[in-house]
Length: 80
Image (cartoon, rainbow, N blue to C red; front, side):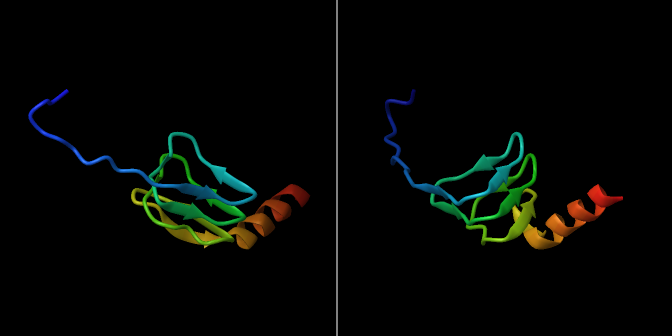
């Protein structure tokens, strides 16, 4: 594209744990680790590590709750 400038190649590893849901049109940047039992909201930009057992969303992605709380909420709604 641009023969006058030389750009440094940027690489990294993305690590995704078990039982992870990543919503539609989300972007996960390099050098990010997503723990186990995590929900990432749709359209999120994951630019830093997300700990296990959390619900995260936004641009940039932030933890907004606990996975266990969401799980209990879904069980309660299902029983009603």
